[in-house]
Image (tube, rainbow, N blue to C red; front, top):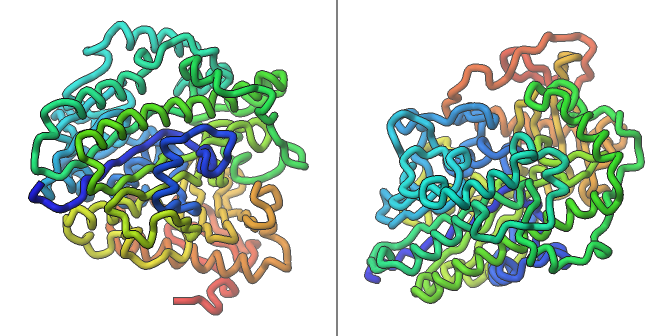
Amino acid sequence: MTDQRPDIIFLMTDQQRWDALGVEDARVLTPHLDRIARHGVRYTGATCQAPMCVPSRFSLMTGLYPSQSGVRANWWSTPDDDELPVRVLPEVMRDAGYLTAGFGKTHWGTTAHTPSTRGFDVRVVGDPDLGLEDGATHWQHEDDPEGYAQYAAAVKDYGPGEEEPAGYVGTPGELPSRRHIDGWIAEKAVEWLEGPDLDTDQPLFFYLSFAKPHAAHIPPAEFQQLYDITDIPDLQMPPWDHTRYDHIRVRDENSPFLNGRSERWRTIWQGMSSEQRRLATLRYWANCTWLDSLFGEAMERLERRGRLRNALIVFVSDHGELLGERFFHFSKYCLYDSSVRVPLVLSGTALPATLRGTVDPRPTEILDLYATLSDVAGAGGNAPGHPSRSLLTGPARRGSFAEMHEPAPAWMWRTERHKLIYFVDPAVGTAQGELYDLVADPNEWVNIYEDPQSASIRDALVRDLIAHVSTTFGAWPVHRSDLLRSVPQTETLPAHTVRIDGGMTMGARALAGREE
C-alpha cells in the first residue's frame, strides 16, 4: 500500500458489561478479545453517554451527547442525512479516502425515504430493525430467508426486544451459529474479507457489530457447554428492601416505556429457582464466548490478508447489562455502573508502543472514539465546540458524563473515585441526588448523598456537573428545545440542589468556590 494510514478495525457488541471479558473476570471465556486487550490499552473507567441502544450508538458515531444531537431515547427518530448535526463516523472515514465496510447492527441509521448507508461502501444488515439503513446492500431476510425465519421463530415468545424474563433464561441453544442473525453477519463478513474488495491501496475501515450478548440468551449449544452451572453464582442482592428510593425506582414507577413491566418482571424472577437465575448468567456469558469466537474468525481473515500489519483495533459495547442486580433488574435504562460502564479497548500495531499492555482507569467517554479515529484517519479536527476528545492526544477528562430522559431527566458525573447521579422525580417535581464511593462501595449500594461527612465531595461533584453541562451544551447547538424540562420551583430545596426551570440554577453554597 502506498497510503500509510492504518486500517481501522472496529469491533462492537450490544449490552456487554464492562466485566464480561476474561481479562476482567476469568470465569468469562473470551480468549480472542483478551489477546487484543492484553496487547492494547484498556480504558477501565469508560462509560457510554446514554444507557440505551439508539442514543448511545448515535452519540458514539457523531461524537455528540444525546441532548446535543436530539437523539435521547430509543424511540426518538434519528435525523435524515441532510439533517445530521455532523458527519457520522463512516462518512468521515469514506471522505478521508477509506474503504468503508459495515457488517451488523448499527441502530443509528435512518429510516428516511431516501436510502442511505450512512457512509458505508459495503453494508450488510441482519435485521431491518437493528440496522435502520434502507440502503443496505445485503439483508438476512432477503439473502437467507430460511435462517431468518428460524431465528424469528426461536425468539417469538420473548417479547419486545427479546427481553421478557423467559428471554433472559433462554434455551439450551437449538439453533446453529449460522442461523442466528449474528452468525449470518459473521459469515457474510468472512466471505467479504476473503473476496477481491480488499485488493486496493485504500486504507480500510472495517465495522463488525453484533446484536448480542443482549437477550435473548440462546447461544449455540457448544458455547453453553463450555460452562458448568455449579460454577455460576446466584444473584447477589443488596442489604436493603427493594422499595428503596432512587432513580431506578422512579423509572420503574413512572416510565411510559416500561409501563409497569418492572414490577411484573420482578415478581416472575422472585418465583424462579436458583438454577433458572444462574442459567441467565451462564447463557449471557456463553453469548459473550460465542461472539468472541466470531470476532476471532474475522481477525484471522484480516491477518491473512495483511490488514493487521498496520492497524488500529477498537473494541467497545454500547452499554451494559444489570443481569438481575438490585432486586431482579435486568437490561439497562439506569445510571449505575453495570448499565453505563462498558469495555473499551484500543489495540493493534498502530497503537503507540507506550500504551500497549496498559490499563487506563481515568474517566473516559465512548463518544471520544469519534475524535480518536478521525484523528488517526487524518480527517482533520472537530468543529469548534465539538465535545469529542482524542483518547491518544486529547486532554484527560475531569469526569465522565451520561444522561437519560425516561421518564424524566437524569444525569451522571463519574470520576475514578465517586459518582453523582442527579434525577428528576416527576411526582415530586424537584431534582434529587445519589452519591457513591466507587472504591469503598463498588456495588453502589450505599447512597452517601445526604451524609454530612460527604458534603464537600457532593458539592464539588455538583459544581463539576453543572460546569460540564453549561460549557459543553453552551458550546454546541442544541437541536431540541426541551433539553431541560420545566419543573416547578420550590423554596424548600437545600442549597446544593439543582433546580430546573427552563435552565439550570443552583444554590449559593454550590456556587461557592467554583473551579474554572
